[in-house]
Length: 371
Image (cartoon, rainbow, N blue to C red):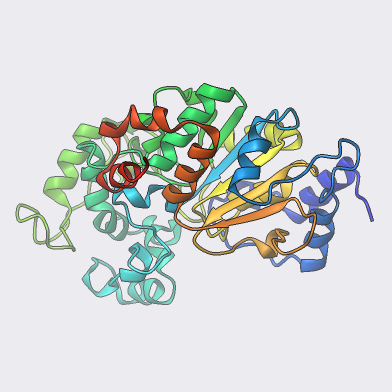
């Protein structure tokens, strides 16, 4: 059974309700597996051009440099930034795994919500009446971003080389809020879409008025308690950070809360990019957050889809890794390791060595192992 593109596009719009287009972080829609399997199978073999889809790192490198691959789209998650020292939210040891609601300034009801689902700590449901859970949990991340405490990883810099050497990189959609892609030298800013916003910009969630990052960080330093007991100068109790324009205590980094609007640029670029992409590289994400994960099934029906991750993901979105002749490929492992191997196959190691001093220690140590 073969679907044409207009039918697939119409089906995707039906499956992705208009209400979801204005939410940043909701769980995957309860779509039936047969529907997604049909959508995924429609483009598993490109009969017209007889292209061979990648089956390992070496063939992926060849595919990237082939004439079949003219447009590359990237979707990244927290796993790309792990080597920088920023914890992966959903993995063991990450923010959600180690969250202790009892330490957070919150009502008993709010604590129960966070205990039942840690993502409530960064949700609009709680933030609209109590900004402290968000600010207290994110305090070291906010202050560390100001100090540029974290560096772009080997995985980030791979995409800088991809842009430099191929000019095939259409867009990087990052679910990460750390802003590390902006440290790269050759990747234009208009090719980066911060799907969930960024920690580096600050505004009021109520009125939209902006605040300088330095001014905001000064207030975080003096007004928000340290639940991690790292900063001895932090106050014992949290005090509100009030917007100078509307006087409401809803000032925060422009990261998108669960249940709030995604940036419009996500929808605009996805609509333009995905129908013509030849390769969707998915890196370091469990693909559980909608609608960012919709890129998986919005990709061109002939596009190769490659997941670089510690474990398989996205099967409920139509990814199939064990079917012969399939366009989907799982490269299991840490992002830095896989991208280093891919850079070796592409002959780009010298480019990585040239920026070794800009890498975090974990990435730099890995690069040193290459002879």
